[in-house]
Image 1 (cartoon, rainbow, N blue to C red):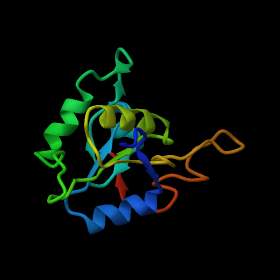
Image 2: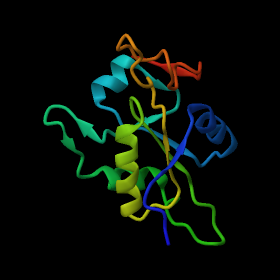
Image 3: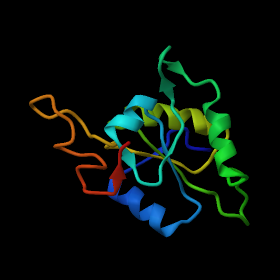
Image 4: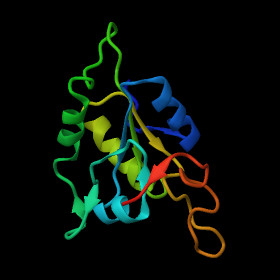
Length: 142
């Protein structure tokens, strides 16, 4: 039976997987404004799961990811299945988007459980208790 939930991995595990597997695809699924102005992992492609102005789920999300894989979504016992790693702010949207990819037939779907900014701390700030940036991994912003 196929798993219906994407595998949760840490930011450091994701960074290592991207280093080890040249077919791995890192997809930042946050809104366009988050991607541009908060920053994003170096090398991440941007395909929003939910975006402005309507804040509805992207109906073409699975199709857009399949296009990026260029055939890497097809997995057979003889071929490598390209990993798709999703990142959002704190790991919640990436979990939901990952489920949609699995429901859409993709097999090697992972999500970064801490996200880019991590959870809120006791002062309601992000970036102090986890996330891609917290761990000092490469990122950039426009």
